[in-house]
Length: 216
Image (cartoon, rainbow, N blue to C red; front, side, top):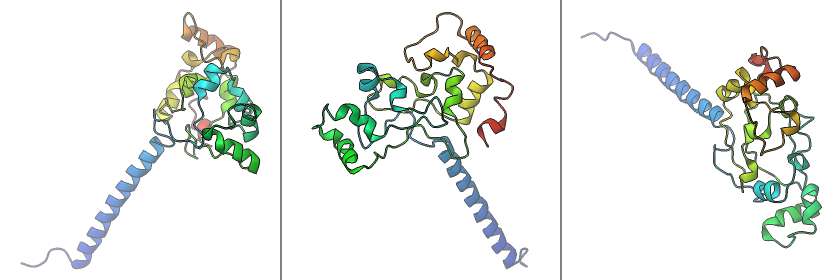
């Protein structure tokens, strides 16, 4: 029986099949990378220093802005330099082994290399300051960090999760003076109050779902 397909055709078919399979595997891996970018959800990651937000925020009473100094003016909330830590720890618990990287880093003028917990892909633009000034509380994205001995990511940070809020921001909004109040809860109709804030804070809801808002 004569051969129906030539050897060249069979070779090309094998190469094409291999290329399609490779492209499919690559696409799946990239999709998983985007969806699970950063620390795993609801899992604390090991840090150079086991910094407890629960202790510093809930027990000591530090305001978010004491460490995250640029959150109201910049896209990046900011990470505290070692000098900020040493404001207290030059006097308190200086002999504790867990604080050794802080004390030594301050002496050697070397910053602590914190691992990011809330990290977005490079193709996503996020601005902390605009969310703060439009009345989005820290709790909305970061959860109750004042109850976390070690910070973990509680929000999925997926595109769908962000769009759900951008399509209907009213329930997530609060007065600006309550943005950093982790205990604040609105009594009454949250959505109705949010609609008032949308008007007062001049939030352009039609533009919130424009691709260029997050992808620039």
